[in-house]
Image 1 (cartoon, rainbow, N blue to C red):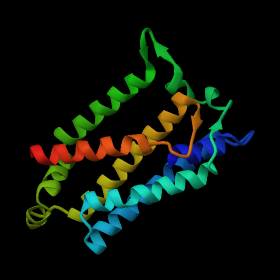
Image 2 (image 1 turned 180 degrees about the vertical axis):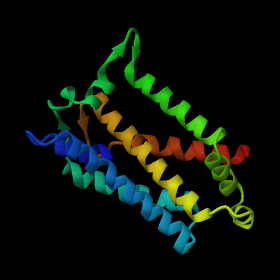
Image 3 (image 1 turned 90 degrees about the vertical axis):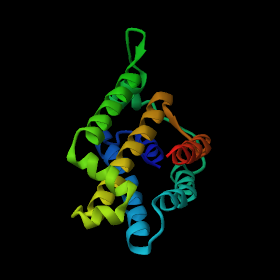
Length: 187
């Protein structure tokens, strides 16, 4: 959805890049908030709250792309266009950005109080609440951070390809579900 919004807006001649990026990031944040509401207020399990939004996101991507493929000559002149296309020696800059995000999330989750709280809430929300952790706040932050990372990943795919298309991300859905299910099985 983020990539579709950014791609559609970047296709408009002279549209300000920062505004397109902001619009592309805000919408997934809104979807993250919807997932949090489904989880916290209605009681839908977190995995199901996220999974239930996937068809909605696919439909929105089709709507935002107007069921067309959008190519943009404006992307190469943007910072994300540079990240999606440039190389540092034989290594794509996108790979380096990926590793920076991996290191950041590793440090955040394994070496901070917030990370310990996140694992605690994920393991047992009830026990976490009983020891004084604000479970709702941790879940809200978790959903929003995940939404930001996913929005950035979608925008990076678009910047690598210099295009957005209606079925963007569909091919990754089954892989993501399989990874989540296999991870749960191992735990």
